[in-house]
Length: 429
Image (cartoon, rainbow, N blue to C red):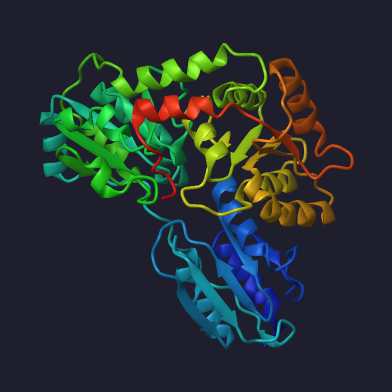
């Protein structure tokens, strides 16, 4: 019988479970990104969002935490033997939150074993006959898409269904980029304000087809304003092929789109300091068009990024479904660790500066500079040209010498206009 260290067996299990990276404390010869255990969980969660792959945080003493893609309760697993560690593979391969407690010493010899791989998920889910019939019989259909569509690689299926059904698509902010903002199929980003779903005319639909939703972004009680079908992301492409009625796209943009555009574009025309928030996010969109990642924390800045930054590709804009201070900087850090040449920017409110600094310091210790712009009523008052110039330098050169972050003062009056259009902000509440 040959033997290997327990850390090697865990490496094999983690590999088969799809764990793409581990952050935190060392564990034998396991490859771990060395960061303080206080920030490791946030980096693991950011890794999953940026790279759409499982990640883990080692909090020391063999305690590994895997953030979940869903909101199910955390499952705790004790692994006190090689067999128990291999038996944990199905749970580690799931989309749920897991805490794994490995009580084996990482150097402890165990039998040289190769765990059996988990059967891959079925990525083609045929619709039930009743589902296909109900969908095909509806005359006024709206698709509502959430972040699960991206996570499960089902954006092509969403496109197929939108075209086959001849309908438009509303997306929550976690699904920004599923359509280019200029596409006729893109209706609006929704869920951020109280009146979003009503102004999207979901109450006038014969049928809402919902897919990949996150209840933190789109609580059931807010969006279900008409008869609805929930279709798993893996069922979108098969449903598109079964759609019985092909019709020319004749839908109109909902009132929400026009009203938001009026406020947003009015801000675009202002070049003087303090910049309207939508003018600042227009500059961020220019960064995105150049291939950058823009990540924002929940809050005022995050609202404007999620609400008004037009996306042209997947993964270009990230705003979390729940409040997690430091998340934007963590997303930028894990992106730059994997792709050092990719421009990136974290956008935060000044209240998030302390949590952000912890991530910035951890990244700096790894040789990565995290560019940060903090919205602050007392921050730098830049006109449009000055802000554009600073952004170009910031996303390409990292933090300014001697400064932890850049600040920006924006005009607070535009927020009252946006609330007048679509009601109070309900995101992250």
